[in-house]
Image (cartoon, rainbow, N blue to C red; front, side, top):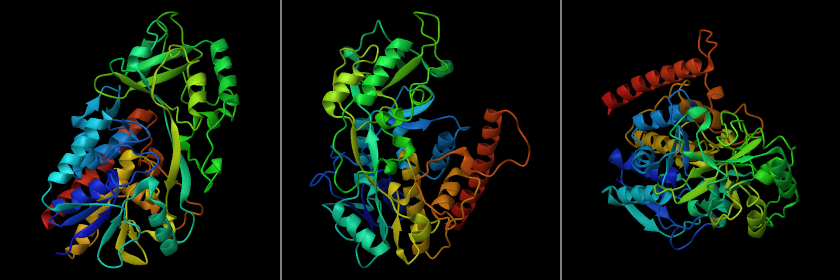
Length: 439
């Protein structure tokens, strides 16, 4: 059998290659690293995490928890490796980035059906089956080829948060706690008084940003999930205080009261030597980050292991171009997976890779596409990116609003979400059971 070309060894590409290989389909996985790195990547390993080390909430009654459970049921490599390399993060599934990427890389490289082909792919091959999973940082040459095939703009921006060392924090000014006591005090909290917050906010507004690349300077193309903190702050003094700096569910043990605002730090590695500033994606100049973020209580002498950066993202006008199996409508041998399809987030990208691989494997075996229930999170996301009725397409992450409502009224939101999740997971089990019987 002719190998399938999977272009890109990020989360989606690794999942797509893994799904194909486990179905007995040979794969050539193309990855441009280490010969060439994107502006935001530094590791030679596959599945490198850039924005954050968190794969979001774990509880089934949440959108992210539901999606990860669906992925686990579908044989996800990413979810399995994430659990094996997890670090404490309250109710979230966060990982040691380096350990996670190394484990994914080792497993992909060890699979007998996967051949690794290093080097940049500048054009989609003219023959054979292909899954393009080059992610939000698709190289200029390949992006131009995709645009020539598909038409339309492909660029927008994303941003990553800074990381500080634990030893450099002022332990007298911060406290460990998770909101509402969820988790085992996994977050470090930096509490503001009203006066401290106002000084910080004024400094943030006046801070100087790093120059953007010439290909796109529009702030409107920064989608909400990774909105830079300084852009969010321009919407008003309470925007970030009700957003990433919200103090709800927290009480400062020194005062016994809820702070005016709180910056949370989340563990970056297993050792707890590094912490990232939650919600602080930024495009400020490095010197400005040091000046302004050092005004956060407890970070006065913080050592920055990495400053925040902004980088380009790429996505298709998927409703016009892709079907719900991630195939190009005009040429079904070409599939896409990952953030380039308009799914937003790590697990959403990985999920699309699983399904792109599974659906292609079924087509190559002469089987019909897997029909995902609309009340599953993965099915809802596939439906969203392929919905031709969407007038102006924007990236979308998993959320309960994508799912059809229950047939009964349940006032308690947590109970309602739990019931919605259990409904979808039950339907997915039935579909996967039928798939196994066919295979």
